[in-house]
Length: 127
Image 1 (cartoon, rainbow, N blue to C red):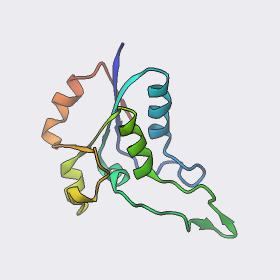
Image 2 (cartoon, rainbow, N blue to C red):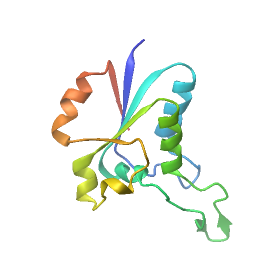
Image 3 (cartoon, rainbow, N blue to C red):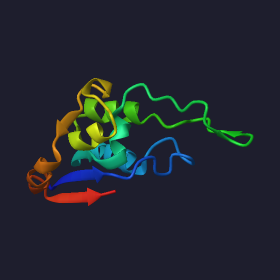
Image 4 (tube, rainbow, N blue to C red):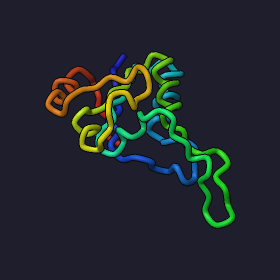
């Protein structure tokens, strides 16, 4: 079975219309079908790994988002299902995020380690 790395860099895509990021959602769906996937969060997407995010007050005019995004919880569920989730530590540091801010089980890799990480997978899907 081919191993796939989901490289997610664009953050909060489609979260206005939906309750979850399509790349994170499809990772869970493919894992549920027996796929072998891992996730690396880079750029602004490192924010997904911050625990305790709450967008429950999100609304547009008179329309309230009744199922707000909960990216930290989504990642925790992926980790619990055996999906390895990592963040680029350099990108987290650039945003002032400390290791203690992240969901349990999230690993860190340096930007310099990315080529070696990419080489460990058969496919890399960039989002």
